[in-house]
Length: 512
Ligand SMILES: Cc1cc2nc3c(=O)[nH]c(=O)nc-3n(C[C@H](O)[C@H](O)[C@H](O)COP(=O)(O)OP(=O)(O)OC[C@H]3O[C@@H](n4cnc5c(N)ncnc54)[C@H](O)[C@@H]3O)c2cc1C
Image (cartoon, rainbow, N blue to C red):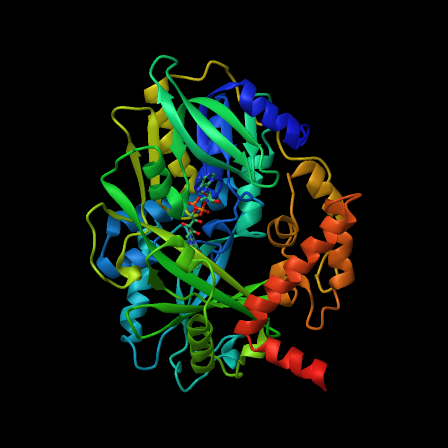
């Protein structure tokens, strides 16, 4: 990716007849792109926004072995996901690490010995590959917990965790491929298209979302990895499927990490069999997530007042130190794509719906639809899709592994409030297709997640830095750079500040 400019990539996307076009560059699309490039296919990866800008930027970053499935005694799923987790820990060294978690039973919840037995069963089902679970009455994070609600100690057990962020995890699958015939284009939407029986290939109509320019691409086969938009994309192309997605909105709030908070805490809620996480991540702790059924993706991608109230309510019940809305330094929201039968209409709590992957191969046309899924098992899923694809379109014409390996030395620079230097904006523009402020602040770095008010700082004290970044993104276009910064500030004020009560305080300060 690093050796070609965006213009060159777009030209290549029009000139080449690809073996496969993947619509959607979240975790599913990116891991599939990696798998297919490695097998020597000519692959086009497209995303209407940035790589990982959908659900994949909003996860809890846990690589877990299917603990949730024990609720329904789905032993097969637990064995499968535990194996996937352990392979990821083993094979993706540097990107996935093993991580201890502490499960904190509710004082009025299930019998804690029964709960401990469930963790033992979980451990046995993963062939004892992880640390043996243990019940501890007192532990370093005890002082963070509200003992009135949780006085039964904590169960320590081991899972996996992404090392830096979910966005970086996605990017890492993509950026190592830069051979001819491997094209990954962000901010490029698939608007329409049709299959030509004569040419035996799909013609896709593309639009560059940054410039409005239109272009076309050709591919022998298409894989729909559009996550919560997959049904819509299938509809555009007239593809029918026995499945569809149900949507569940998940919101996390971030607060400044308490001293000594190193191990993620999973609180038993005692309601709907759900849990509440307090997850240390860099300088913040993530609280949540929510689990709310929504009717459309649009309805779900913005956090609402009720989401913040729910998160604060549980923080104040579970934690020893009170949390107020003004303590929230960031919010992150995503929608889980949950696979259900096409005629599904039931109104159940979304946690009761399966988190499994599903692949549907169209019988008439070379079109593959992917549903559901999670970070755990994404590599296995990519292999499964690639195998199905090979059966359908044959082996790649080229031999060998076409991965170029990791990008060269990362240039770094500091940003106020960040614990360590971050990849520099110039480096990200040249090497990682970074095109917008959001691309940089949210997905190439964790600035908008780790420093307050999406990187602006409590009193806009980081604004000069944000302006400097905008100038690097739009060299020689001062008006454009200014407008982009104004839009960014307005958005933070209208969403984050409004939800956390800061707008009132800020206006109040201004008046005084
Ligand atoms: C709150 C929360 C916590 C979670 N925690 C975990 C966890 O700890 N562990 C775990 O394993 N999983 C977790 N998940 C689930 C996991 O994050 C998702 O299953 C996964 O990110 C979905 O990836 P995806 O590639 O299917 O979808 P997405 O990441 O949404 O990618 C789909 C992409 O398709 C693009 N697209 C759509 N339409 C078009 C078009 N017409 N043209 C071009 N591009 C298009 C979108 O822009 C988007 O980037 C969590 C989810 C949520 C919401």
